[in-house]
Amino acid sequence: MSQPSVLAALAAGLRSGAIEVVDLTSPLSSSTPVIQLPLEFGQTAVFELEEISRYDDRGPAWYWNNFRSGEHTGTHFDAPVHWVTGKDSEDVASVPARRLIAPAAVLDFSAAAAKDPDFLVEVDHIKAWEADNGPLPDGGWMLLRTGWDARSHSQEAFVNADENGPHTPGLSPECARWVAEESPVIGLGVETVGTDAGRAHSFDPAFPCHSYLMGSDKYGLTQLQNLAALPPTGAVVIAGPLPIVTGSGAPARVLALVER
View 1 (tube, one colour):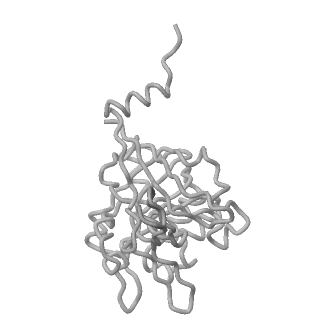
View 2: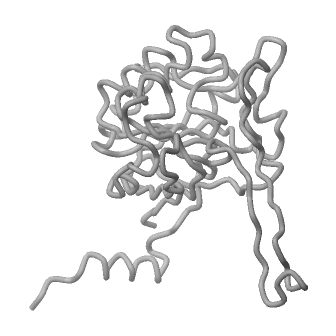
View 3: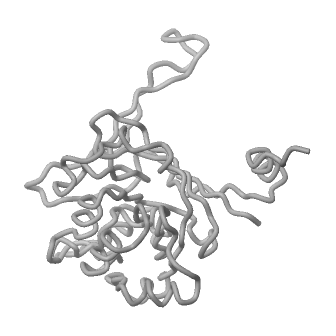
């Protein structure tokens, strides 16, 4: 007798609800928060829809739109070429499809971030998590839960900036280097507007998550939602960025499969 098909078992689990699909994607609209750089730099575009037709004389039986968006607007995927340290590496269209489906570890620092919006994850925090949950997944994602997705309704609350700049949680420079160069994961996923902490412009190096991860051919996922619905281990993430040729990144639909 032939062995049961792994894919058939997966399909049966999805159909029965034994495997739950959790959407980790922030809905994309004109109100989706975007990163704000100092005025002397170029700025990413907010998401815009331009109606082509809607069951009218421009197209009586169909509705469709053009859209305009930055590559790094909303829930999106950072490819290595996004940063100068990875300038000779993969663009988003070149990322192997097999790397878009991977296991995930979810590290919960939401309580610490609620007390201190500038909270930084250190290597010791990750080591403590591993002592309780096992090692980070080889070839998987490290997802950072901070509760920041609750702020995604508001540009002001999400960016959380004052006269000194943004205040959002993230990794310390040493932790970013460790994740990029020593950990087995392929990338970092966060709930904030970018993979770096809000005050990372003042770190050495500046924006260490971008610098170290992109320079190590690793990836970023940002503006994730619903990480609270995932277990610390066991989920599988499906990240689907638009394969923009020469693109530095792209908006992505990010899903997680969770066995219930």
